[in-house]
Amino acid sequence: MNTKVTLHDLAKETGYSVSTISRVLSGSDKYAEDTRNTVLEAAKKLQYKTRRISPNEFPKSHYNIALITDFHEGEFYASFFYGYVQAAPLSNVRISLISLNDPREMIKEYIGLFSDQYYDGAILFIPALTRKDYEAITKDIPDDFPMISNALIENPLLHTITFDGYSAGHMAAEHFLQRGHKKVGIVKGPVSKAESRFRYNGFADYVHQHPAMQNVFEFQGDFNYESGVQAFEAYQKCPVKPTAIFVSNDLMCHGFIETAKDAGIKIPQDVALLGYDDLPMCLHTRPLLCSIKTDFATLAHASLETLIRLKNSTSQQIGLLSLIPVSLVERHSC
Image 1 (cartoon, rainbow, N blue to C red):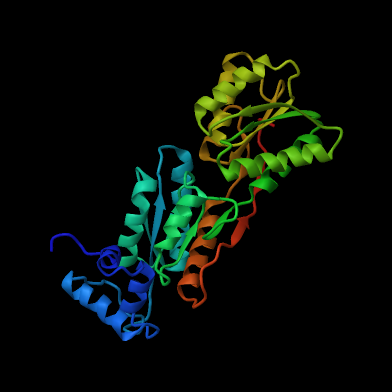
Image 2 (cartoon, rainbow, N blue to C red):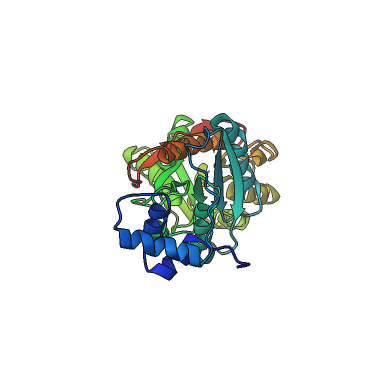
């Protein structure tokens, strides 16, 4: 056959789940003889060949991990991937970046191919996926193929490792109060994304808990440069202007600050700005941009170590959430 046969093909042929197929081919003795024979006969019929190497053949010197994402142009994804490039050698990992143009349509097919071949596990970073998408994915993951996510959803189904966005919002508001700002504002990220809601909730809760502060400006952004431009235009029309604004990512903050400068607004004298992610652009903006630092190398190292631990564990995968701490980097904009 010219087309490589996958576990999904065997599942269709036999009527068994991908997990059952995977366990039978791995030599599990937990299945009836009829089930084993059906699977093995289908594998022979379809000329299924596995590239997996038994762990008993020789010691594992490294792990092959697929980093699956809907890669977009820009500093965020470049910084995210570079964090994995830095962390991979420390965990004896060879990392492969897999970019999906249409993740909802392609993800299940690709995971089937990865688990069939030489990958030891996968890390997902696809913020567009919903809980329903994860339900469909987890149904087809073989038990011996570990997978974690770096994208936050509420009540996660996979092990999820991401940054502590709630503490970031809390930290931003606290910094503003310490600097004497009482009237503050926030440019939010997409309401559909849990990361956005966590950042907003942390900020709003801190303001609510401190009667001296007042949130006088909110703008619904979309994590892109244009949202920052639009946020500034909304700020200009605001009857009571904040003296400090937390912008929920650096790209929107860049759009805001450049548009503000063109309009003659002085940063931070007229309005202080604080971004999120601490991307390289923060050092190229004038004034230098204050930002919440998300350490991508730390995120990557924690993710890889967790994935390896899952690979070598006999326990079932469950949806645990681990949060990586963030910090505030002070520069000239706030």
